[in-house]
Image 1 (tube, rainbow, N blue to C red):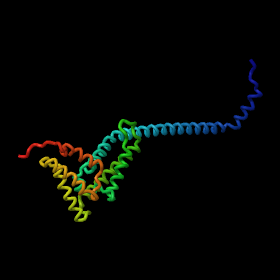
Image 2: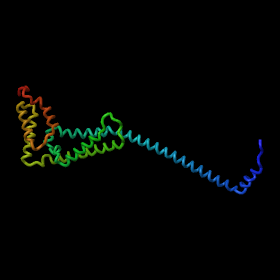
Image 3: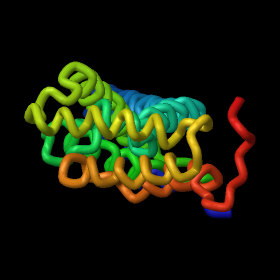
Length: 234
């Protein structure tokens, strides 16, 4: 094997002898690179931890929103039942006509809030809702609840106070006739006549929803049957 060439080694030794201080420069650079690499690694690790924490937080929020969704639906159902108490009860509509009067701003407000809540309600058995959608549904249900409560309090406060004297007399007559139509002690003919007169008295005063008329007719159909045989009165 060929030996080392002294002539080629000597220049390198001379260079190192004159520029020995470069050792410290390169050492410093290496140290800087190592520090920079370590910090970069730490930043990447920290970022991964932050992403993982964000994912966990998002998952927890989603779980919480889904668990809370049942409560929001129950609140929604409760307000709907309160609304149906007026929408399907002609007697209540006579007592509190504002609840069915779409000329009233408060009535319009709760009906609009009702539609918004219905539009955001998730279908049964669907995929889990995004957190933002759950929060939007919650806000819509709360708005419906509040708007309905405000309208209901005002309707109970004013009752038929916005009608004229003759109109209030007609409403009072309609109340009496409705009680007679639902009175099991009255004859079928009396009840039929009373029911027809209720409709006439309310004509032009209260616009009865089809659902309210249907509910009343369904409830009274057996009573209004002209062929109905009632027990003799004592």
